[in-house]
Length: 179
Image (cartoon, rainbow, N blue to C red):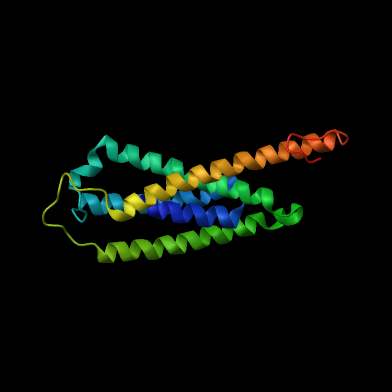
């Protein structure tokens, strides 16, 4: 549940806020809220995995890795979109951060309410149960989007370096063949 919820929160925060640190901060509270409810439902016996899952180091290690991916997505997307935005667009950064945080908190509250109301005790837990579809989908989405955003940022930085080089020496051509 945390990878998919974190992925959606990271995309929303990065898309709206456009300031990497604020985007990461906006994602942190909703992710931790979803993690708390997920851990509680698993420990209460409402998940496919046994309640002892939350006592293992591997559970918390996976959650830390997912959090790192989610924060990376939010910061990379905010940074990529900030590069593309207009120069005078920074005036409403605080307002956008507040709006994104409010949207994320409302969506998180609705999502968590639905999860708690829908959860029910599971009679037979499978210690070898496979990863739920939404967990696998969230992990794949996080990994794929972080790779794509990282490549996009590398290409943006290279293009910026080429432009600075071309501006510094107007008489020479750059490797791309353009000045």
